[in-house]
Length: 189
Image 1 (cartoon, rainbow, N blue to C red):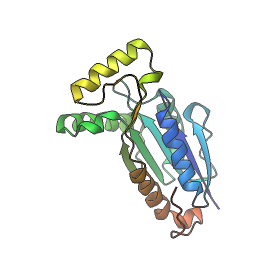
Image 2: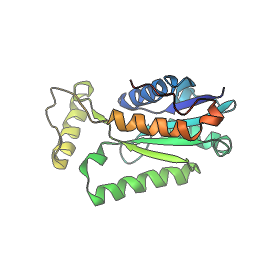
Image 3: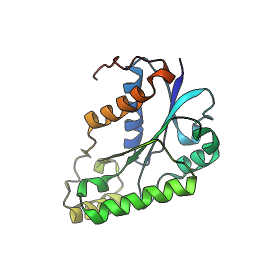
Image 4: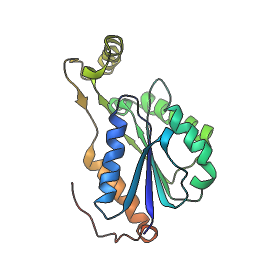
């Protein structure tokens, strides 16, 4: 049975939670999964597929993810890969914001030279209670402008876990033969 490598970059911790959810979903199917933050991730040799998750902050993704992808580009080109892009901007449902997010994602993929087989955009979180006062203030202003949640006394999580589970299961189903996992073997978490 082949293994899947899940690599992630996180700034405030939510993308780590998303990557853990991806790994747990795959493991529930009987797949062997290794989960690593990008700066600690091994080379993809010996893996049957790769899932990378990173979040958008200040117009780009984590440097550790870009470096790992760039360094591993030849191996990634030989494997089924998926990219999960985590961003709050998807909640705005505005054409200009969607175009900007698509541009950020495409610039990242062009700079790294990577073309994942599948891409999923996932809404992230606003962990206000974990931010310092300056970041909390800045994020609240940005979110208010977008019409979002501004109560800084609590955290907000926007990820659609059912939708993400469907994406992960579809990726696994598409590569079930490579991963030696029956496509019908699904467990809902």
